[in-house]
Amino acid sequence: MQRPEDEFIPTRATLIHRLKNWQDQASWQDFFDTYWKLIYGLARKFGLNEEDAQDIVQDTMVAVANKMPSFQYDPAIGSFKSWLRNLIRWRIADLVRKRGGVTTLPLQPPGEDDQTPIDPPDTDSKTIDQLYEREWQKNLLDAAVDKVKRKLDPQKYQVFDCYVNKEWPPEKVAEVFKISVDQVYMAKHRITEMIKSEAKRLETEML
Image 1 (cartoon, helix red, strand yellow):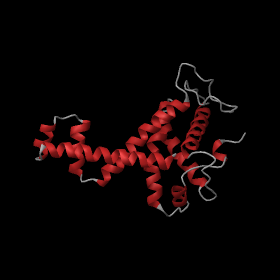
Image 2 (cartoon, helix red, strand yellow; image 1 turned 120 degrees about the horizontal axis):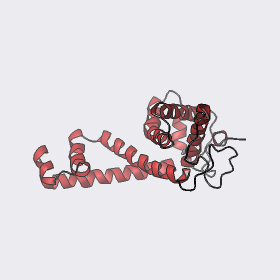
Image 3 (cartoon, helix red, strand yellow; image 1 turned 90 degrees about the vertical axis):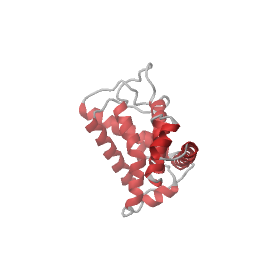
Image 4 (cartoon, helix red, strand yellow; image 1 turned 90 degrees about the horizontal axis):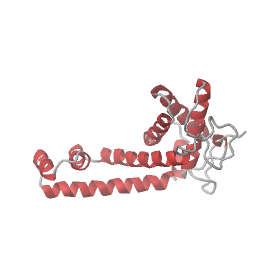
């Protein structure tokens, strides 16, 4: 049976073009930084321990890298998002088989013609598609925040973090950072818009 990773791999052309060059360490680091949390999080959701989840991250990254030399891009075939989902699923399935264990989550999405799911789908649990979509969106937001954070002056992000994430009153934020309350509001607005813009860009590029 042909596995998903053995099929023609669809993804965004600009990223693949850069990743074809093994010496482009910045692009490979960017790819790793963007996707490793998604892969790790899914593996953990399937009940794998920390060590095994790290192995899934490594195996998935290696599988992607192995496709780069011969890769040809065709957006008509499908999305990188769905291809990566299948690739992660196979890596998890292989590891669970090797460990001789089972999982209560379905490794076979409804409608896919896979012959060897790890376990029959549990009708009371979330499907792999639903789980993957939730983790994908979370990873997308986390990646956008990380990228924006690296672009900002540390203090500006701290103002945003204290007000938005830690839920400090704006007056307390202004007092601690010796700025006006209006500047606190402005920091929230500007950084929120930056995160939304970055998330939209990633969503567009990673479909």
